[in-house]
Length: 90
Image (cartoon, rainbow, N blue to C red; front, side, top):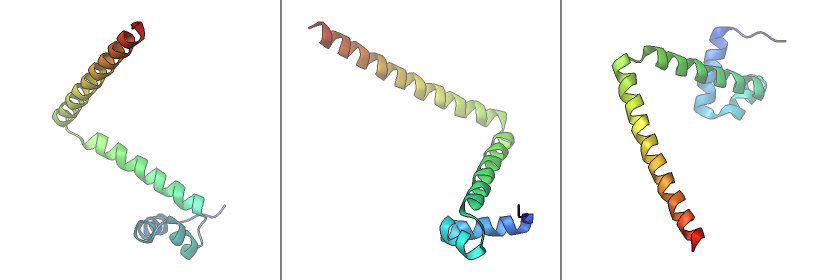
């Protein structure tokens, strides 16, 4: 298994962002799947960083918005269910 330096991986990811995953893997001689895995890992790391750096107040505000959105969705689904139940009774 070939080992790549951290700097090489970072530069490869930058190139793949600019020209695309397939072209970057061909130019660099790195397997498409390997480069794709690096991108996935980078995405997961960035998500973890953003979660950790989020202030408690911001997280609470975000969660409140999410709860409100879910309540609206549930209300719509309940109304739709009632509509279809009434329609079936007829």
